[in-house]
Structures are given as structure tokens and as C-alpha cells.
Length: 640
Image (tube, rainbow, N blue to C red; front, side, top):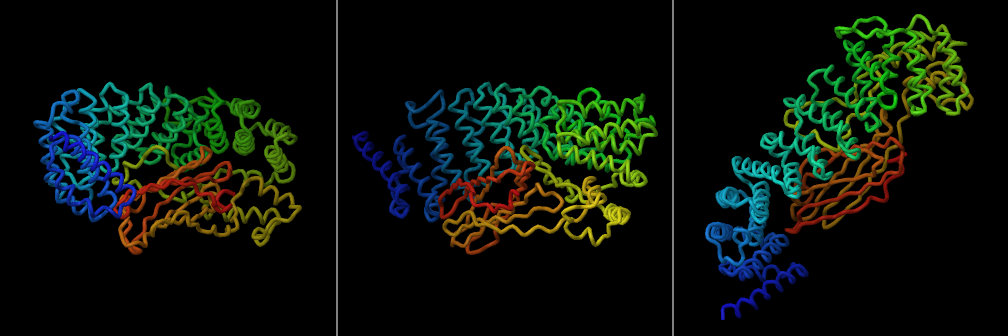
């Protein structure tokens, strides 16, 4: 009789679940029956009832408030399952009814989220489940994972959160790759809120870098980069540099970029920073971001006391390998600026490098003639040779011969540089030393503030500050040069004539700084609107970095219910580089409350057409919402 009665009851519960999914307005009808059904001890009825309650809570705020009253009853059901169990036929590998345990934990997670009283009621039970569940079988691991996720999503005690992180740390030692992947993914989610607890498992995370499975090593790399801070930067950089030397090609770009960004943020000294950069360039130079060379020249230019050290290290590295293009470009720039220091022998090294003038010129000519050199690398080398004509006592005839040869180069950019440089020798030799003197110190346009509370955000996939801004002395020097070339400052404020004079062409070729015209503002764009939730994008392109686009996403809520757990994620094609900065919050108050803002930094070095895909996830009117869409009407100014 009992079995005959329970079978229709199970079917009725499942039918109610389907009805709620189709018509949430029916929620209030099922509130009283569900509370009564929780007194049942039958596996099928309890499992169906808890599934029904979860559907109700996710779709109705009133149901969520109603069922928070039954949290003590749910806690008692789960405690009975853990200690005695209901029936042996539903036990798996010694774990009492893991399917029912998992569903109860998920429901507790929903009821305890953003509710302190309910969270306190379930804290002791969660600690009991976390400490008593058998981990020798996958059924126990599934229950433990749900327990960890519930602990992290409610208002749990600090000690309980540490226990949850330690469980994930034990998962990292499991032989099952799937369990290790789940642990790495979960720790990556927790690293911002519980950074110190995750930090205790740093050595285990670093060991996971050597995993043969690509998905595991990628997750381990992302988590390792997120764990770097000012106190462990030296040890972590050694581990990451060792991984860079042996990691698969598809991970080298992410690893090299992460090391450079972490070193820039947490470098203990400038010399250590330069050594770290050189190691990355010599190990995986071809995988370094396009904007890395500009940032590194800025770093070396600021470290005046390390100019001799830097130029010698770069010269030695270039002499050993000219195939790494970012290394070749940085070395050529440094040799052009500080080549005279190579011959002086003043350096912190115990045995300074002995270099002759002919060797320096020969190395730059080798870079120019190599079939491995990109046009941009050849331009760096040609400019370096030209600058050395004012820094080295001899060799001007040799430099003039090389410059004149490239005056007929098939590459237009290189040919133009050579023609203008040759003009310096022929017509403006008296000005050559002034024009080609060392670059002045630059000031960064964006300062990097190392706040202790933000150390845990040094992660995988990030863009850093834009290019430097010319200083006042440099701008004054430009006006002086224009005056010397018989061109007044007033002329510099207008567009160049169709047939510019040789002096104007020379100034343009040397890339001397001048104020660009202010670009027209980019129109803002509304890309999402649903039930009062609106997302608008505004665009700014910094004058000093035309390839950088700053996108501010502003989300507002005009409905009568708060939007909670709001997350906005973005993706761009591989030819772009994207950094998502932390949002201003994850709750949007109802009826026009304070909006959420988030900044996207998008670098477009190839001037490709921008494609932007967004994913929004949040809770609204008691229901989870997820929207994935591509913004297909972006203004053309966002990629030109």
C-alpha cells in the first residue's frame, strides 16, 4: 500500500516541477504542500520535492522567503542522511544517498545566500559533512564539492571557509584529472575572496603546472599568476620561468604575458625587473605581446643607473640570438640610445663585456640583413645605426654607406627612413647631433598603484597601461627644431601641405612628438535591455595610444526588484588583447539605484574590425538569467 501510494505522489511532484517551469505564476499554489512533503522519508518523494522547492525559490522571491523557514528541517534531514541514512538501497560506495545529499546542499545554498540567519543555522551541519564524508570514492567527492560550494556562497564562518579551501587543496592531490580540474577551477573562483587561504596551497598548485593535460596546466597557470604578490614574487617567478621554458606552444603567450605583467606590478627592484624581462624575451620572445617593447623601453629609460647594465645584457643576448623579434627590437633601441656605454667598460658586473665599435656596427648590420628580421625590426636597427653616428667616435662612413643602400629598399617605410637619414648627413649635418641625441625621460600616462588589497588580481589574461606621454622639455625641443628648419610653430598647428618641405618631412620621419588633433567623440551604444535592466557602452580612445580602446559598461536597473549576483564577461577575437577590470559591485538596486560600472581595455594593434561578445548572468525577480550575445552594431570609430 505504501509503495502504491508513493508512486503517484512522485509523479505528481515531477508534474508540478514541469508546471512551474512553464508558468511561474503557479508558484504560490505549491508552497503549503511542499512543506508537508518534506516530512516524507522516501527517496523519490524527497528528491522530487527538493527539486520543486529549488524551482520555486529561483522563480519567486515570496517562495524564497517562505522556504527559509524550513532550513532547520532541511538541516535535520541531511544530518539524518549523514549519520544513519534512510535506506541502504540508495547508498553508493558507502555514501548514504549522495544524490539526495547533493540536492539538499544545493537548496541550502540558495536559501542561505545573502541571509545571515539561515547561514548560521546550517554552519555546524556543513562542518560535519565536510569532515565526515568519505573521499575514497567519487560519490563522496561529489558531496564534498557541493559542500564547499555551499560554504563559499553563504555567510559562513571564517574557519569553515578555510576548511573548504583545504578540501579543494586535497582534491589537487587526487589521481583523477577531472577532480583536479574541478579543484583548480574552484580555487580560481575563490582566490579573490579568500586569497590567504588559497595561498597555503601554492606549492601544490605550482606542481600542477607540469600536468600533461592541457586544460589542467592552463588552469594551474591562471591560478599561479593570480597567487603572485609582493611577498612571493621572486619564488613564483622562478617557477613560472621554469614552466615557460618547457610549456606547450599554446600556453607560451599567456605565460609570457602573465610573467611580464606580474613583474611590472610586484618587482622588488628595477634590476630584478629587467633581468626577468630579458629571461622572458630570450626564452619566448616571439610569443610576447606587441606592446611589450614600448613598455620595456619605458622601464629601461627610467632606470638611469642601469643603462650600462641593460645595454650590455641586451647586446650579449642579441649576439647569441637575433631570431626573437621583440628581443631584437628592444636591443636595437637600447644600443642606439646607450651604445657609447658599451665601449666605456663601466658596469656593475665583475668582468665587464669588452666590445669594439666595429662589433657593435656589425651586429646591427647583421640584424638588418637577416631574413628573420621583420620590417619593424629593420627600422629599429637602421635608427640605432643612425643614432650611433653621434655616439661612437668613428664609423660614420660605414653608417652612411648602409643608410644609402636602404634608400632604394622595396619596403616603403624603411626606404623613407633611409632617405631622410641620408638627408641629415647631406643637408643638415650641423643639426644631426641635436636631433639624434638621447631620448628624454618619459612620464607614464597611467600610474600603477600597488595596493595590498588588489594583489590577488594579478592574473591571466591582462592588458597594462598605455604608451608614455612626452614631457614638457621634449615638446619645447620640437618647437626649437621646427624653428631651425625654417618652419614656424604656427605652421605646426595646421595640417601639412600636399608637398611638404624637406624639413617638415624630416620631422615627420623622426617621429618627433607633436600634438595630434582631438578625435571626434565616439557615440555611446545601448546593447542590452530586459525587464528594466539596461546595459550601455561608452567608448574612449586615448590620444597617446590610438590602438587602445577604453570601453565603460554601465548597467542600470529601473525595475521594482534588485538585481543580484550580476556578472558581465566579454570576449574578443584572438587578434585583440582584452583586460576586464573589476566591476564596481554585483548588486544593482531597484528603481534607478546606483549603477554598476566596469572598464574593458581593448588593444587593437592590427586595426582589425572589432567584434565584441558579452555574457551577462544575474538573478532578477527570483530567477537566474543568462544572456549571451554579440554586439554587432559597434561604431566604426571603435576599430579605425
